[in-house]
Length: 369
Ligand SMILES: *Cc1c(COP(=O)(O)O)cnc(C)c1O
Image (cartoon, rainbow, N blue to C red; front, side):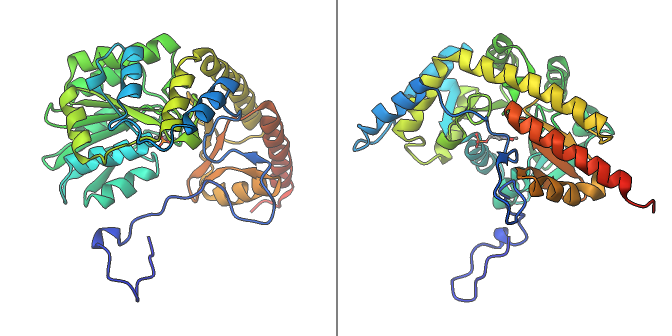
């Protein structure tokens, strides 16, 4: 990241050369009517969640829970784990940052399949750690054997995003189990499951962490309210792990990790699992419609288990993102690699499919090179 610094004391050299985190939309004069760049839910919070947030504001003169204990207890109940097996934070990405700073010393390695979430190299770099990216296979899937092979003496953390962002590809539960079992017990395995709700039945999504934690103490599972739970703006994430892992996270976490209204939103959301089920069902319908339309337009698309689709168009990524931006559609562009499109409401899919129709026509009209 480039920070102009002629007039200030020099910040740490760890900041030199860090990639920046983008906003998920191309620039330009057209206002975006379709915000499909950040994998947000298309609908606002339910009336019950909004009421809970409003009620919690009345107590804003008081500090909230020191460690978010009330929410940790509710999440423990949901997942069949003690509250001591839960850490909460202002987004799962913040908890990941705390995990990396608790486990990594400068020079240590974080092994992660790559391409993956663009926050990972920033977080590793801030801790002075090295991010060792392990290439995905030719279908943009995580390659468990290659991940195991990349784990060397300096590796402290193996970080697995599943389903993977931005490709949407998923490792099946038994493949994940085998991968965890194959990794050394001295390495902390972090499963970033921000999109878990889209990839498996709700009962499985709730029960799997406890089953895995019963077998492996070197495991930290990250979940978030930002995606299928529809609360990205409230910034609530959590970690499920052995109480000793949670204690280490608490050791680096500043007190009062979550404001009261955010806790209230999460608690009210937990009381309405049907709203999540409805979002997941809408996503499945729109994702398959978009997937079919993208294929019909002659564009490549990876098999997705999440609320977005990955179009590995390589050198055409920037032109495609600009074409969509001109139609008022914000997507996430990975220059030279591909474009990630969030599945939103039906009207969002309609807009994407219409724009892809004209992209196809323009491409077909272009003279052969
Ligand atoms: C969206 C996302 C998150 C969620 O981050 P929050 O801080 O909880 O909003 C985490 N990991 C990945 C891979 C994501 O795409």
